[in-house]
Length: 195
Image (cartoon, rainbow, N blue to C red; front, side, top):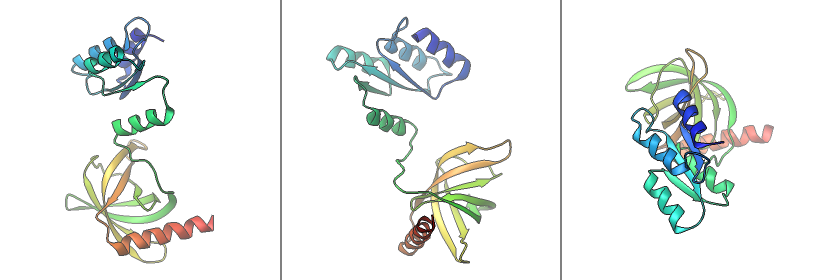
């Protein structure tokens, strides 16, 4: 409800993203942004400010150090696009199919075992007890239900902690051969038609 409340919440919970109105009661949005960005332990927080569509407000947003600003009235699709940019999340263009298959992964030349939770034509969600880092590349050998093996390479885009020793990783495919892309699309297509 106010800039002060937002600051208190952020100090106690360390938010990843703050979306604030420039005209927030008490501490204004631009003041809140400046305070957060100056504080060493909080400055990695992303801030999106909403403001009126005029030169003065836009200039305040820019000077505050906000990562992005949007003019009011806020367009929901525009806001979602900015949030996706902030967290480097690619828009999901394809259907994900549940998939319980074993995976042999390779990460920095070390092998690990996991299983695929789901797959789409653009990526894979795996689950393992191995700690992997976001932004790194992983190779996976998928043992498909039809006894085929498919090797995929991908970049770790999301890291989710399922429990104290189980992690889920969202992997975006990269550098796939035409045959591999075709095999994955065929598998996803078959599973979609079954449903």
